[in-house]
Image 1 (cartoon, rainbow, N blue to C red):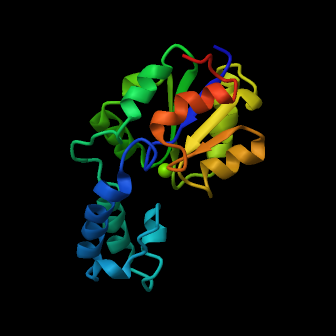
Image 2: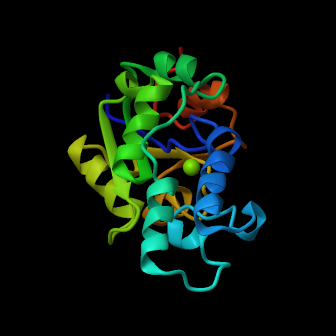
Length: 196
Ligand SMILES: [Mg+2]
């Protein structure tokens, strides 16, 4: 195996927006005492979610952060085709997971969706810390001793993993433009796996 596929988690392999987003926004709205529509629904970090509001007292902000990053997650199904696609790629290309967020919450999502065993490496980019997924893509390629030209990044965020991968010269497969069930044949088209 001389190629590496790095997968994003949220809205790539699990339906975060559909299943987890609104309950998390509601928890935050209840704590800060506003209607849920007043929050930034596109926010990923708590500071982004609270951005439309005036400055909040520090203790309220802290409680809002705890609610947003609550490590208790419900039972999650992988998105349709995710498990089958990863099983089909096993042993044909190195598989890594790269996700940005709160470590406890991201680990809980990985366990809940049952995909942990699919990956040879799992990296969590801590959302409030310095650095970006660019650093992790470089580190993973080095760790697996694979060139960036043979390190493919699969994700949904054009401003995060897809942008960093493109800037590094890695091939990219954005989702949902690429259906999960088509990923193995796309990787074969790119010459990164042998066709089945
Ligand atoms: Mg994502």
